[in-house]
Image (cartoon, rainbow, N blue to C red; front, top):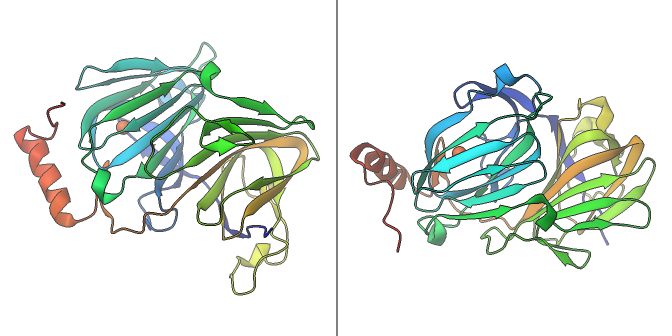
Length: 303
Ligand code: FE
């Protein structure tokens, strides 16, 4: 077994999106190879309705998948094909935009004003960029939850884990998406196949991700070289941790325990041409998408 070293860690950055939604972006619109096959990760946890109620009115997507995981409050969504619904606490929506959708996503919050959740963008490989749009909506009870002997809880949103399989399937990037809560002081290891890119997003408590067996030649940030990484130092509970190669991730929970998303996928290693919510392989494909938005042919007939 080789433990994946911590390559970088950083706090998600305050970002204004949609019609004026205050969120925190862990990555996105930077170097698209960094987290390949993932393009963007937004943390939209917010407790001030005036900072999220304007929402994300009508906008297009093409060439990607968006994965929304709600922890508190609700997100109402509707699209130009007539699909509509509402995501509540614990629910997940995996939307394959494929050839194109026009939709809106409107956060509503709960009675306490909380709107908590995350959105991940996964890239589609060239042969699936123009696939038919598809939704997979999972209600919270449909998501397997595994409780280990030591009290560790893992919600398996996508992929195989400890003998359970998450309800989302047929996803091009072959992702694994886990929501992991570890009790205070416990140390856990999680196997992640070597070919995958992996990151963690810490959002509650604190933990120490070990990189004790960092292979020679992997350059680590100065503050983590030869050291464990204490997430509490940096995070405010919004910390992205990117891992290098290896076949497992280890973490030791701090005094309050730790909760984080552990997300991995197989890199696509294709060219990326990116314009807002449209991500293609070439500039020509981007130009075509924008021309189609203008002339009303963006949405393809469904068979
Ligand atoms: Fe969207």
